[in-house]
Image (cartoon, rainbow, N blue to C red):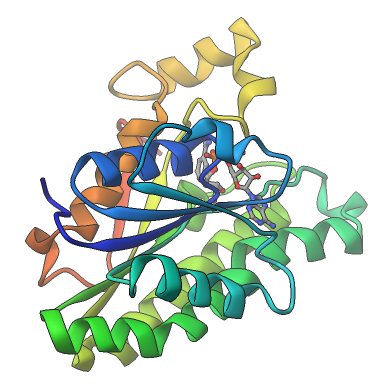
Length: 250
Ligand SMILES: NC(=O)c1ccc[n+]([C@@H]2O[C@H](COP(=O)([O-])OP(=O)(O)OC[C@H]3O[C@@H](n4cnc5c(N)ncnc54)[C@H](O)[C@@H]3O)[C@@H](O)[C@H]2O)c1
């Protein structure tokens, strides 16, 4: 029970890594505010789990951070752990990347993440003052240090997540708020379904990883749990790679 008595926000919680994290955090004793866009099956996904409170919200909306943090205060009584996990991908060679795709990628992956962190800081400070610690965990990607064809917007956004998180760690450390990011490798989720449903593509990625398999959402949820737990008290500004050894080789 690594999160007994904690209040946690998890964004992108209707699917993949976010859904697994909301469930794992709740299993470890947290009250969880699970956030995702309307019409994503969020409520059904966590139906029957009394520790998970669903909030249907597009995090890119102007008022979204205020609504999200307000809901956490009302429904959970505060925030000990903020897990900014929602993300979108885009795929087009730079030459053909549209402004709309670039902006959509940054709106979710970086801008909304920043605006939610900013809004949450006073509440996280209250939790840290009272209980000795609070956490920000952001989902980046191994594309926070590598890249691939077609990923100019996605890779730039995930480098942005790393830069944002390190700066938050620096600024918030004095309040005993840690800020860390996870770097998932190739994980079987909604985002990668189209690729990994193709056996040929799946086998290539399985073979690339030292552990010879794709990651499952719970593999990343466990990495986030580690950073959320009290065991991570002296870890901040860190990027935790959870990729089964995908990026070991050059
Ligand atoms: N799957 C992978 O291989 C992989 C690898 C590295 C990083 N990641 C990152 O992991 C995170 C989770 O992705 P996933 O793989 O679980 O994909 P996923 O598509 O299964 O889940 C992402 C969730 O984010 C939600 N979301 C997107 N835009 C939103 C918005 N505007 N408001 C609220 N919710 C929104 C989606 O509705 C979806 O439920 C993302 O940040 C992604 O970039 C995934």
